[in-house]
Image (cartoon, chains in turn red, orange):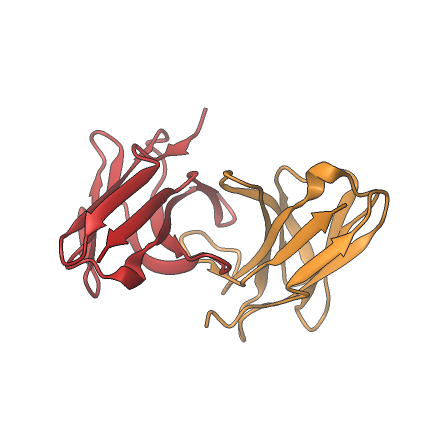
Length: 112
Length: 114
């Protein structure tokens, strides 16, 4: 069946270091992916998206990499800051009608 | 600020009761999605509306229903509430119901069943 999962449920990094959050997906037909950030008491916040015709996309301090061969998605955060502490979800647009499947999330903690 | 507004922020009620959660999508967005997020769980898709009509159903219980009104706001109705319905309920919106569009989320309604 379809699944979107994260390799690590928790991740702790030192302030200023780079963070890498990983996500595996199982459906090779999925063609659009989004990373969301969810802070305590808030709803998921759009960070960056990528379509399957791309391998890499960069935003402000964030980079998403897509490896379709192994069905793997990663989010890289450069120079991690305390404000980056949150739960990060990957979402996979697999079904028509813009429906997404979400992983359970990775909790990122930035150590000052 | 995503532009999606949800009310109320918190709701406390008892088992067997009925509640209504409200969502106003981002200006210009025609599609609305409802999700449930339980403790330590990911986001579970419940239902989608597009321009007033139901578009897709996910893991939505028969005790739950939703609608989207002509002004595009949406309401999620939860009835015969059980303890297990305690969760965060999120609404999201997108420009249309077409594929490959980001969904933008509100800050949710926290529902607590006593």
